[in-house]
Length: 187
Image 1 (cartoon, rainbow, N blue to C red):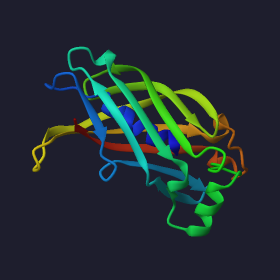
Image 2: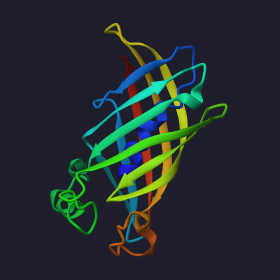
Image 3: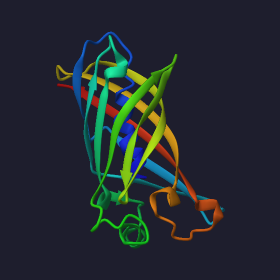
């Protein structure tokens, strides 16, 4: 889940367009880190993190020099069910008292025709691992308030046990699908 959040900010690093080197601030009201995981193998459970922030440094002349840093407040997990969210926050899953944030720091970006692959370190539940996020650029341009924005969407799969979250939910729930939809505002 956290990985998605981090991945979302990382997506902005994939920015491909006419802009010059610039820093973007993640717009938390138009950026989303969402997850889905199978419930007992019968249906999908969806959720998101409501509190994310981050920065994106992008140089159109040298995309490989781009940098992304994202921080997610793990206690902001929201699955639309208060009792389940309480369980997700405890030591069986996110352990938000011990690990109040999850972070993503990019290390590389490999562009392709539609976006690319963003690689970086995701730190979640006290474990740091290198992850890759498939990124697609949604669009960019001026906004109605005189600013400039760029948006990206990224997807990845997260194995819970890789981040020491092995609470038994059954074999269909070992992996989670993450979708990161981010919008950055150029500073």
